[in-house]
Length: 369
Ligand code: RBF
Image (tube, rainbow, N blue to C red):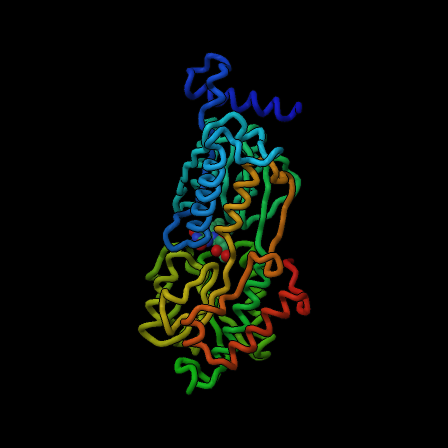
């Protein structure tokens, strides 16, 4: 009760400050909207992790709003959280912080400093570190970080994906495709030589994504070799194409791009020269039919929706870090897209289906480091 009371005062203070010129807490003030924000560390275009984040938060807000209409009678008993209690509706603001990462901390500070937002939702592994100092400065703001990991701060909840599973699956199929019979896969050359183009280096990239891609590739084809290249940002398609061309010229026939907008350049080079691409984060088969051979996806939209709903209803656990994977339904390997079935021969698809089953059933354990 005490907790809910202090929250009530917090919301009341924010609403009063904004709409009543800070004249104290009137009863009507509680009827105002509750505002939350999505902080996109980058831009949404060509970054499915971010467009799924925004879409999922919006869905959660729509769902909570429809339950709040009619005075919240559609909410189950006990579902009222101190956050939404007394608000007529929830409003969401989406801020794209842009590609200059040096500005993110100041932009997030400015967002929190408005005092408007009780909850800020964001996504990427660098965000917990940027947020931590803000939680002492703005203790009334709660943060939910997807695709990030931090334990022990009572104003931050993090949920990350088991990207060892996601990258292992990708490496496995990349090596199978690279060593496929060229009569079945026309761009495959005899060597198991793969490429990985990353936008930038970061701990999750260096310690999970790249090593797990190599681990998966070598589980399928022990002599598989992976060349790693870095774009230097998340948008430069010209650089992405240059790196892809040079990998192709050195004998690479399958490339994994994790580089946002720069992956458009990798696609252009694949069409120009003839090599395969393994896609990451979302179902990307239709981006380049015949060239994309796999999609290892994360259910970021579903997670964003669920986490936002939980935060609004007051049932998310702050101070806790969760990791979710294939078994929980948040990582998957797309097998039902007709373009997968058309592009990848059955012998490879059968091996992938068995691998997915092995991970799902726990026969093959790939815990996130
Ligand atoms: N992923 C994107 O798709 N677009 C981005 O702009 C983007 N920016 C990132 C910036 C930083 C500092 C870090 C650490 C990661 C970024 N990611 C971005 C990567 C994303 O969090 C995730 O690791 C990859 O999408 C692979 O799932």
